[in-house]
Amino acid sequence: MTVQPHAAPDDVILRAVQVGKVYPGTTALHGVDFAVRRGAVNVLLGENGAGKSTLMKILAGVEQPSSGQLFLDGREVRFASVNDAAAQGIGIIFQEMNLCPNLSVAENIFLRYPAVRFGIDIDRRQHIEAARALMRRLEHDIDPNALVGDLRIAQQQIVEIAKALAHDARILIMDEPTSALSATEVEILFRVIAELKSAGVAIVYISHRLEELVRIGDCVTVLRDGRLQATAEMADIDIPWLIAQMVGAMAEPAVPAPPRPDARDALRIGSVSLRNPHGGYFVDGVSLQLAAGEVVGLYGLLGAGRSELFEVLIGAQPDAEGSVVLDGEELAGLPIAARIRRGIALVPEDRQREGLVQCLSVSANLSLASLWRFLRGFAIDTAREHDAVLRAIRDLLIKVSSPNVEVTALSGGNQQKVVIGKALLTRPKVLLLDEPGRGIDVGAKAEVFRTMRHLAAEGLGVMFATSDLKEVMAVADRIVVMAGGRVTGDFPRARATEERLVAAANQGAAAAAGVAR
Image (cartoon, rainbow, N blue to C red; front, side):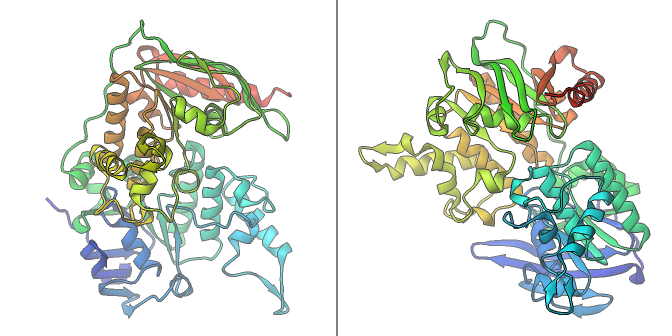
């Protein structure tokens, strides 16, 4: 049953009335109504492909609606561009970061509205001072002069948030703002959101982390398949209600399989290290094993070295030291393509920069890493390639009207599934997944984890990195904790508790910080 929130007309600063959006071959929105209240966190929820990001892009001037009306302060408006919407007080933090990698942090923050001296010269000193103040507000020490392209994805997310805060928006749209943040950084962001609310700023908040939404949301609107499904006051509902409105029922979690003590090692890592050119180590003498048919969760906080370890294993860090043995074969010294051919595949954390080719179709992205499988002489057997692509789309439940659609037309969660499908089409013996649940809704996340368990049951070794305790506790057979580039804990699932994992992650981080290398 739909619960309708009470909102007086003067509480609503922005209203969408019967907004529709049609793209070639698909309808993203079907006559959606959406009200944004002043001084409140207005939650927008739905599965991947439900139309959330499309609606937000319309509210922020990125896209124009095919039908319907927008009212700002009771007056009908039509935003011709992002700058047009920004001029009227609407800011947006995009799910896929909208930053220039070749510019500095300060230059990115003030790119749209630079401070100018005497009308002719950009005031770079003011930019740097203001950027430094924003970083202090967000409790980060990111250098305003650092190139954005050199930052890790979590740091880029902080820059994206700072960019939105710099321009005093009346309405601030946050599309998955915490997807790359650690628990500590999420707490900082929530404090900033509370400040903005008290100042009367309207927040539109999109996230797949349901616990976050219940905690900070004031009201919620749920979309399903591009249609308005339900609206409610957050105080009146709970997480099962949200899931039921999104997908119709509670998704079944993946259940860890019984341990297989006799399984051979699919992957054996010995004393792997990766030096930090500025001193110390990103990865510091890591040794561990992954059995065939086992799912290992690699848990750690931001900067623990999880992503860097995966980069070493796939061959993206040629200066790394140590032994990497895949199914009895040493991989050290081999390039990325050779490692993929031998049976190791990586689903990277940053799907946009490292997992997808933006200008190619869904089909081309899926088969890109496995074209050697479809060779017939000197040519590609396109029929076999097409069949494999269709199977991947079906098995991973990728929502797309045609394999030939450009991959950027998909929602963030469906793009994540394409990256996973690309890795699986290489037929790996070991699959590495870096934050596989990032930006994926509860139903899609359950599908991904069920796929991981299915692959493990077929004898594949699966290792996934996450900073989400609930994910790692629900899915992994064994949990390895990293901090400061080192392994600080290795727990069979039966012995793992949230308290033990957090203690290992934080004690290890503290110890690593005190060691001068």
